[in-house]
Image 1 (spheres, helix red, strand yellow):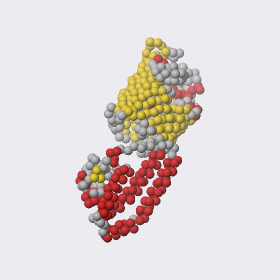
Image 2 (cartoon, rainbow, N blue to C red):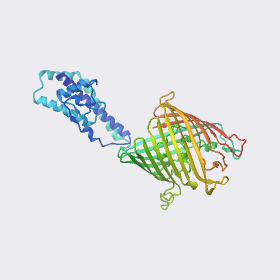
Image 3 (cartoon, rainbow, N blue to C red):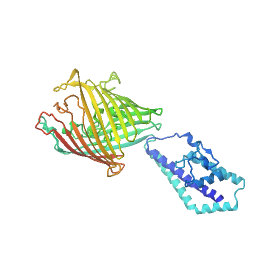
Image 4 (cartoon, helix red, strand yellow):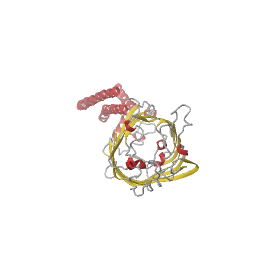
Amino acid sequence: MAKVFWQSLLAVPAALGAAVAVSGSAIAAEAASTVQVSNFDPDSIQLAQITSVSELTDVLPSDWAFQALQSLVENYGCIQGYPDRTFRGQRSMTRFEFAAGLNACLDVIATLIAQGGFGTEDLATIRRLQEEFQAELATLRGRVDALEAETATLRAQQFSTTTKLRGQADFHVVVPFNTFELAANPALHDTSTSVASRARLNFDSSFTGRDRLRIRLQAGQGDAGGAFNGYYGLANAGNSGANYNVGIDDFFYSFPVGNRITVTAAARGLSGSDWVTSTILPFDGPGVFDPSGPRFYDFGGSTSNGAGLGVNIAFTDNIILDVGYTAGNAGATSPAVGIFAANNQSYIAQLNFLTGGFLNAAVTYLHNDQLGGTDTFAGLVNLDFGNFFVAGHVANSSFTAQDTQTTALVPNTTSSTFSWSAGLGFNDFLLEGAQLGVYAGEAPVRALIFPAINDIPFATKPFFVEGYYNIPFNRFLTVTPSLFYGSISGLPDDAADNDGFWGAIRATFRF
């Protein structure tokens, strides 16, 4: 019995080394993470002495360590459990828990010494074990010293105790295979390969472990240009910071109120889909071209340069309500403009049903008061069958009509546009983490015409199809080849080719 005790006690130095190793690793990870957490769960140190291993509800006779635990409990009273009578043997322990367990064992040793409980045989066993495991103990001491030195270096050289720097760079090469040519403006015909890129640096800070302050710097250039502008360009290119001029693209602070409400206050960068928990469609992100993110979120004009406020309310783990408000140019000219008197304002409300499994869905209302105002109602759904999914959306937007020639608003006249998308995809297609997807749809337009290119009216909405293959080479690099087809009929020059066909490849670096 004494032999079992000393063999069990021998695990204490190893456990100490493991605890210090875990602690050192945690400190190293902390230096690279967003949050420096100083709080701990007080329940984790409210341990209680047990008198029988049967009191531990999660320890079974079939467990590999059952006999060792049984010996330590029944013969030496050297094991403590949680208040709910669990041992949680698969869970990493905290430094407090380790100290409590070690103290219990040392108390037993002190009692045995005081009572003369150590005989010649026990002392001989101790000496033999010390000699047998001398090399291992020395190795553990060396590892602890190395971890302490590494931890000291990380603390001295860390970027910040509260902020993590995250970066993303997207490079695109776009090749036009066959695009339409306008007789009124032949320059809009794509004839050569183009390059577009965008770089982002996100400074994410947390002060409580549950909040986030984000400041994003962004720069980029190119968005395929030419006739492709009629299809809204690329998803990860152009926009703010054009011509590689660095600008602040996002500036917001998000924090929880209780356990089910999150509030976000934005000075810049959030509007439309930025306020929602999920855009539901799995094409949004892996898709190379902008229609992969439902276009109705941006329809009616962008207000992302303004300030805003959003609230996310989780009624249950699956039902979440998102609401957001953005003032397009709040404070842009003078304090008199104000948040609620901005020239451009937008509102969004989205009710989500998110299971993380077979069904994810949402219904959305969005208003934008630019160009006389736009009201959009939409529904989104994603059916996930495991490695295969089917997803899509429908949206209807109503707005003040525009004159077909001058594009001026026609008072007291309303019009509407119906848009949709639908597609399917395969996760882990050929490679783990890869996604093959194809989707098609029609984008919304401001009126029954689309005066987007040199005031030349389009009679119908742009129709598009994209197929892509998102390939993660590692956690830093993802490459996505894509094919995109678009068609806009009713051009003034009916003899021209109205269709466009592009190939693209995007390389995304995350660091």
